[in-house]
Image (cartoon, rainbow, N blue to C red; front, top):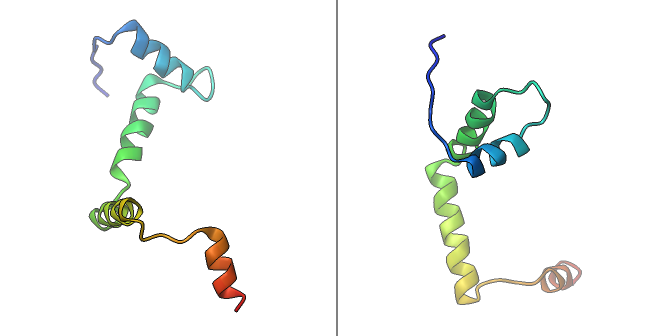
Length: 73
């Protein structure tokens, strides 16, 4: 595997260090995990999230109590 060097701020380095789950975990593993987290959402999931956010903004929501009451009718 080829290696390279990147420049990052000390703040980012500290953030990366704080994300280590164990001492020997590499920064490559940490960065790869972070990238995977952003790639997991499909276009459909993102569309569903956007629709849900619009529903919340326009008040098209029900509280848990309202849903429970309806289910218990």
